[in-house]
Length: 103
Length: 499
Picture 1 (cartoon, rainbow over the protein chains, first blue to last red):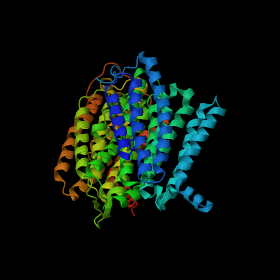
Picture 2 (cartoon, each protein chain N blue to C red):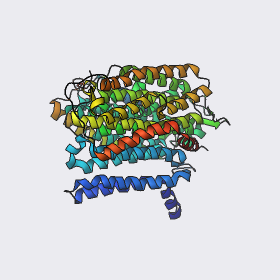
Picture 3 (cartoon, rainbow over the protein chains, first blue to last red):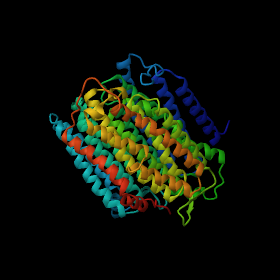
Picture 4 (cartoon, one colour):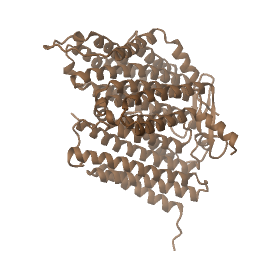
């Protein structure tokens, strides 16, 4: 039986962070980019909760994680509304092709 | 926490409460008097006046409120915060006037209630950001501000470029705030606190891994650098400034940048300064070399902004690059890490507020009539509407930083602060940059005054808008000659609270 320590949590969160960043950079579909952003936020959440539990830092970290979950939901709502608007205008959500503004 | 204590703490956030009440009043009014949208801007003005009263009242107040643990709170109130809140409020006042005359906003009259609700959402976010002394509150306020501004960037939906601007703003903003959050989580893990004052105590002689600290701080700086559009995080700026409604572009270029700078300076001073020597120089912990990082970013930002602006034909896009360059100039005041530098930045912001909003207002009045911001459409406008031509000239000269305008005094203050710290090389680079910027500002004037145009168009300027431009232009000149009150105001306010 492996004892789960702080390091395990940090490794998982580091992986999530990297996957999130990778997804944001490589994905073309706007919705997938948003998924990548969610992964980054959740990796930070894991950090907060793990540090708060293993570091005996009190509840600040857990409260922060709660705030972040709520904010992520708000952000997802606004982001999807904007992506929907993009779909209505361009009939696709490919972020690479939405570059009318660049000369 | 007892009731008396709590109500005393509430008195620390009176301006924020006033803004929140304004949001509610606008929402309720919008719902009840559905037919009569004309009154909403006046409610907004009333809200701004009431908030301004409380901000001025707070000028003499200093202290922290709402402690989570220990004696230091999440909200810090001091003269520094009041100064920046005043800047944000004046910008908001101007934006209400902007929106009143903007064609884009008039065409979406039916949603005016939402528009002002979102604007005040941004104001609330910026107010909290300016006062925040806790990483949790910093993150929350930045998100509050960003979420409102994402929607505002794509608010009008009149052209495809509006939705494109919103999408780009959203993606870059969400990534940088995500990076910042990860950085905050690492700082929390190393020190066990999110309060800036406690972080300062925890970093005092702390045994931390320098690489981890450096990584975390760079991530946090990514979030702030995005807000002030500093160089590696500036990619959103030209596209969003070009695509967003012009009133929002003007607002983003002044108010959200002011809040970002206030946050950056408070974060640096509260968290990393061990003591301030009698000359006003900050002594920092040697865990992270902020000065080198800021010098690199500042030089990169202004060079990139100025050189990219040379090739722009769209005036909104040119002003976007110019605002990137100005962020670089203002970082000069931060990187010297002295009280004098901070007061120079504050003075510059006051000047930048007037000249930049003035320039945007002229661009908007012209775009209302000719429906474009392209520089070729400005040919000969200096003759057909001399008033707009001359005032635009004053704003552009001030943005370049030539005497006798206020922009010159602002830049002079920044360079003096630099030379006080013997940073001659950086100062020389900044001066060269100013010379480069002269080209693209004057190019606009060349199109307006030296190029002939066949058909003659006259641009109608409503009387209040005329007065607004006149006031902005005269203050730009006036503060270039008589700048002592603002300088002393900035110097008094620069003493950021520090325990």
